Image (tube, rainbow, N blue to C red):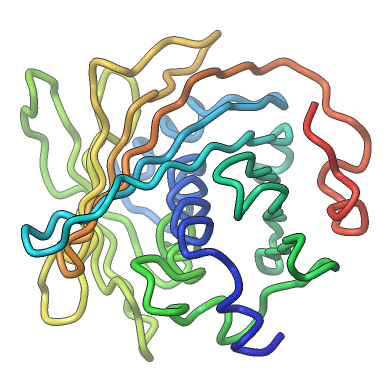
Length: 276
């Protein structure tokens, strides 16, 4: 896939799908002591059965010097049931018009995650690999590497519990992961704040090089709802402190314990997939 082809992917689609995937998965990897128990609690809170969500993204600039309309994107998200502590996910975009029909498929595998993209402008399905996964694209706030760093960062790091604290009247576990894998690491350090009562991550600080906070993810704790045996956040925000931008994610509908058509997570069927 050429760089010119990558640039055809609308920036809002790239930014939104990465935020979405970051929120739907639980961080995995090595942990010590109480951190391991907290990660287990987070994993157990995730719905184990197949389901879908209708979601909306609202992105805007936070710069006083830049006046622009809020950008709105709507999508349906299909989640496969958990198998071997892994889950597949497919997102189908409905609005705005210029991204309608775009689809992104993530297959979570032990040997390495696979990401596939279909957009009507391409006419075929493309697998994202190499630098197209790890590099920033077209100057956007999110890259495909964010996906790996946000839910798979522990591949090069180790989770430890730093402390407990109170935040918004809730008892919170504070965990940290430091990535010592070397090379060009986007987030050398991540701090994660987990609500003790629900095992939901209600805040994350993503540190860039130089020990500066690059991005902050937060959950509206009043929006966390009990769905079957799981606690699900319905309103979330990702703020990029360097680029002065913000994306809010709102979940309008959630349903689990549902069946999905055969081939939903088959890359060979991605081009022909239609939302239910």
